[in-house]
Image (tube, rainbow, N blue to C red; front, side, top):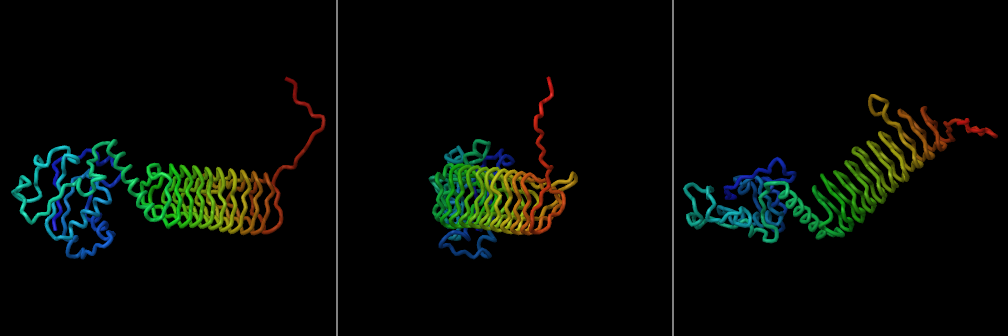
Length: 356
């Protein structure tokens, strides 16, 4: 089977286009295989297909599905651009799909003919030539993906203000608020809530988890029934367990956070492993770089780190240990008990500032 997209216009925006602008046979095969009610033997049909599509042509998902159904009749299919797409009348196009054919009237009767805009009248194909076209295409793609998610049981507060630039895989009952950006591949479990103006990039969000406003999950995973944010940042190679609390202005980088851990305020945890039910107080940080590279911290289960501490890696803190607020920890801490590492407080009665 030969599918020809007949259009003699060129495209100058290929390098500028961050979305797939060239429609190829493997995309068609994927579309056909996912089309409801369509049964197709690709070994006999699409493997033998030659797809000729002008670079820079964008088709909506609905148009691809419509075209995949047209392919099933086994005839030569020619898709013509029209004034709405190619900006020139059909009779002025160069019909080069078949040898010796220069006009529409010369095509054999067995050839199936369809105009590109008829595949999806609501979202006709568009030639991508400049950044303005790129923005229109990306907006249409995002809206189409958002509507697909809503049909699958996802509540999107305003589909025109949620920007799905990658692949979104949601279980039913997910809620996504306005301003959220989805990039890469993002999977969200049932009942999860994504607050306004979040950024999810190659992320996994567990069932029942709440990602609150203005939070970023970039290349990390968050378990079930956890909370993230507001204003939290989860960086790549981070794995967060179930029932974890990641609060406002907390940054996690390259770390594994065990179930039930709490990091609620103004903290940085980098290159660390926190076992289950660890508590990190406000303002505590791991000092994770020794000047030549990252170094790791391990905190045992149930340990409690007070506010305003500095944990200078490499460091091992035992299970159930408690570290007093304001401590600077430079040596390993044994399990259980209290560790204090701060200067003794001194008060001087009658002290007067120097004269100026």
